[in-house]
Length: 248
Image (cartoon, rainbow, N blue to C red; front, side, top):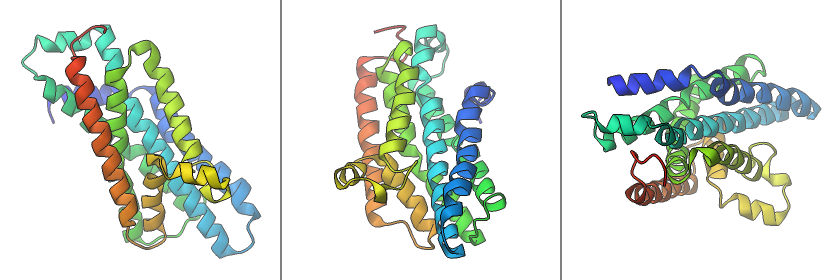
């Protein structure tokens, strides 16, 4: 672990607002949705299906927020002059970006684990040990797409727009991607729209594992495609707006 990586990790992880919105809030939503709506289903099997689906959706929601929040911060670092200070050190620009990517990916883990624990011990979701481990692992791997998206937003926007953009993007991805309510109850046109969003395919990875099967090939390919697209755009933006620029 490099000193820069350790510093950036501590810097974000001690942010109480970040922890609330990416860890505690999804956990609370998991309890709320399952106890309120899951309690209306008829059989135990239906409850298990709803509770597991709700848990996966909130794991995805928290992970998306953590990935975006950890990487979009680069816009604030540029404006504050922190990245300009780093420029006079021996740390290369590629390592600075690499650290932000690593921090963004690592900080999705607490949300995934906490929501999974709430699903198991509060809502009574029953999965085998292998399924639990596979669920966390596949959602952690899939979060790279949103780390790339956060990096793209952080490189593209100034600090005045970055915070609002993160909130807006998170809400749109959650609402239209079927993380708050099942896509199946959407009008047909919105169901089609959901399948063009990375959040839909991201949650689908987890739902497949929770159901006891391997992730669908289409979901994997979709997430790989989104990751590659966001990363390519981030590289193009970085070439036009160097990290060390204070503005513009």
